[in-house]
Amino acid sequence: MTLILFLQACNGIHKDSSENNEIEVEKEVSYLFEGHNYDLKVGMQRGFANYYNVFIPKSDLSLSDFEMIKSKIEKKWKLVYTSEDQYVFCYNKYNQMTIIYPRRMEYYDKFGQKLYIKSSSLDKWGISIKYIKEGTSYCKDAKF
Image (cartoon, rainbow, N blue to C red; front, side, top):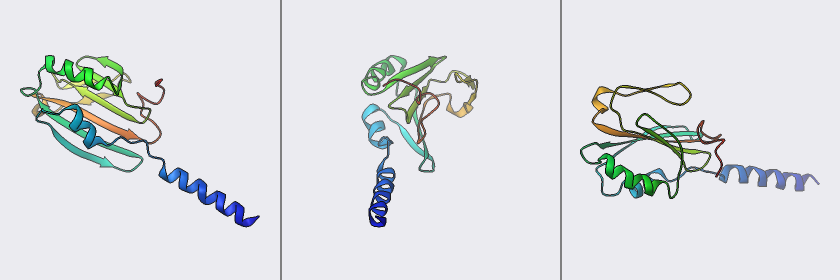
């Protein structure tokens, strides 16, 4: 009986450790922004919370070009929020992509949190992608 319990415990551990809902960010960015001059920066990587930033010069991606990319994004991602030059998409409950076309240095998200834009970033699209193991604030309650 002890042996059976031990095997079940090991199976439970294996299941939990193999479960990963994070997308392959580099492949996704390459697919979505193919043909555009983007700069992907890997941010904090904790395993349970991973962050990435992508910057695309506004001179390389116009607002009208973005509409075509937005259609491409919406084939796999769900648009859950839009306001003041910002778009928030969810791939699933755990992966979120926020895209901002900054025209000023201060924006707020739907939760009232200030988004900080550097003056040196006003000439670039800002795209942040994050994975949160417990689900992101925008995505964890979204219906897929």
